[in-house]
Amino acid sequence: MRCRRNATRPMLIALGAFALALSACQGGGAERWELVPANIIINFGRSPASAAPGTESDVAIPAQAIAGQPIEVVILSFGDGCSLQGTTTTELGDHVARIRVFDKQRVSNEEIMCTTELKRFRHRLSLVLPTPGEWRIEVIGVRSGSGPPSVRPAVITRTIVVK
Image (cartoon, rainbow, N blue to C red):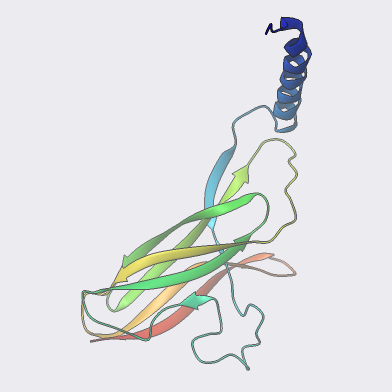
């Protein structure tokens, strides 16, 4: 069987043209992302009056813990087509744990189009509370709303008993 070189040439030219067009649509440069405070979900699909205690936001923290043992904390945030899941930081104080939630936002000097999809990000972290007593857990991010300013700081507070 004999291969003809000229038969694959048009396909390679078309593939190269497609790759060139695709890179032009994407701005031709590397994407850059920056960490920004995450839009944390507050009262998603529920009114505060009808929510069970401890469920008025999409933050899951157990009601009790054992000193020095890790507990799992789950925080939901959201973004659009120009957002990716970010990270969290934790700071322990005197019976206070502050969890700051971040997501990544696409940065560009050009006009870019983002898809109008709703992305939900699940931030999971392991938290160790070292001493017994009542602890206040503060989840810090932002919330979007109507009217100025469109983005406001948001803090969700929970109390946990550590034995």
